[in-house]
Image 1: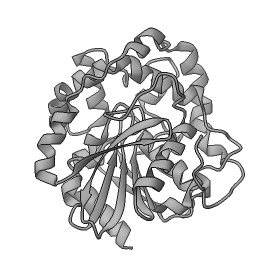
Image 2: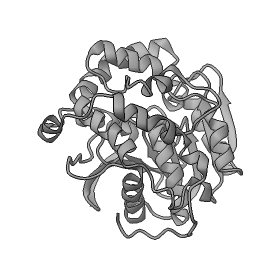
Image 3: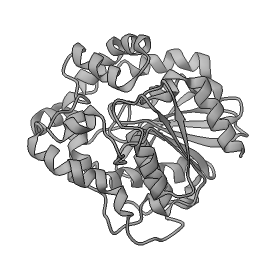
Image 4: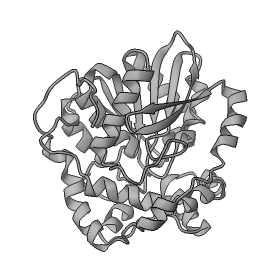
Length: 328
């Protein structure tokens, strides 16, 4: 998909890059409830995100941007220091660009921020007729950066956004100045969470059907109980409204697995930081060492008492760690 230059050419993915998908995908696809084709095609986005953006714009100065990139209409927030180095922030599954808003104020003065709704998510277009495999998403993000982000960027990705970021760095070295993987998905660690084990039984709390389901997901993603309790009712409406689309997007990641013969994250040349909250109940923190085995020059930073979303739970410490990494 797309005609974006790679900057480097490598053959084949590291075997560890596919270990999690190879282990989980066949069992999940055979046991999980399949996507409902009609409801996916009839889905309409009923989101409170535009209102949140208007309220936040007055505080941060970030502006909503929109453009057609390849086969999608993409939406992102942009702002900060116009002379600063560009920073790209990529959210995870069942999420959107607003996941980064707690972190944004601590980066604005020194950097120019580009906070994207990944294709199919948030305010960006969802299209039931196109594939959403990882290769497809990486190509779309690469085309967006090449056309809308000036120069090489500090790329930061959380969860599935981390997995997309890692593949992006391996395939498009010309676009990435540094890489930070924040609790990235897809790394098969030496241990696993109940969520990871449940996927092999067809269970997926990422697909939220009720307010109770939203509370369950927030408790898995966020270690700080007060923050989890506060966010669950705020997130519930969007999560429930998107449940059929989210089920489809999750299936797509497994059905359209990356091409093992193409370049992978092991080709990453950019300085890399793997940041992980040790209380992550979605993706086990030992996955950090799997990623480090794939990207040998990467450094690992673990946070005690923090879950899957460091930028939400500890935004000041997260910003400080990022600034120190970028300066080094």
